[in-house]
Length: 320
Image (spheres, helix red, strand yellow):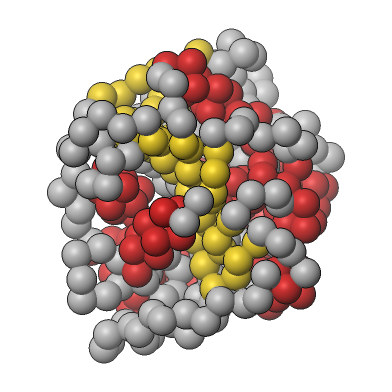
């Protein structure tokens, strides 16, 4: 597909990447009632929790499933904003909490990672069994966007109900993105992620004291160290490099077979050049790449009811 020309115009002062990233993450407030929380019992004996936001105007057989970012959860503003936009247009919306992200540590030593597409597949099948949906659209943010794109590119036979997908601010090259996060300009973000992840690891250590040591957790001083100590090993990878290589969605993009919109701002400080797959998009029938000049990381603020990526997701998904 040709590269899409973006119409996003960031208002002052949100042309600054850090202003838009921080405001959207920490200061945005979204009034959105969650209809119910439902637990999914997974095939490996574990569980994850779904937050449902049912359609606000009618009982349509349309569904959106949304995945969150690193150290996130269903109650993040970007998750609720997307839910509000789509529920007003007649979609039921499922906000997926990854394992251990809904306020309760999961049962197994493993949790979630950027390539755990088996969990998304189980959630999709769970939703299809719950109600006969005619149309399903998928959306993912950051790490959850990588997981979504990997799922679309590696799955040979998608359920016929899945019509379109939208991924926002996606680090599709995980190793290179980690190096960007380690740069001085991203120090505050990486420290915040590290603090959250270490808290979660300490909780896990209480349940699995023989599998991970408190001293090893305390010694982790970077996201790479967390992935070396826990993320890679707990999910069956040799090390962090093996995890990044096998789970980066970049390699799966050419195989995507449904209309998919990827929105990555050019000034996103989390993303290296490899996360702007211009050549792949130009040669793909289904991957639509939009690269606004501004927006930071999931910070597409505009002077309207919804953020730009929410309006674009509605517009894009309505076509299919």
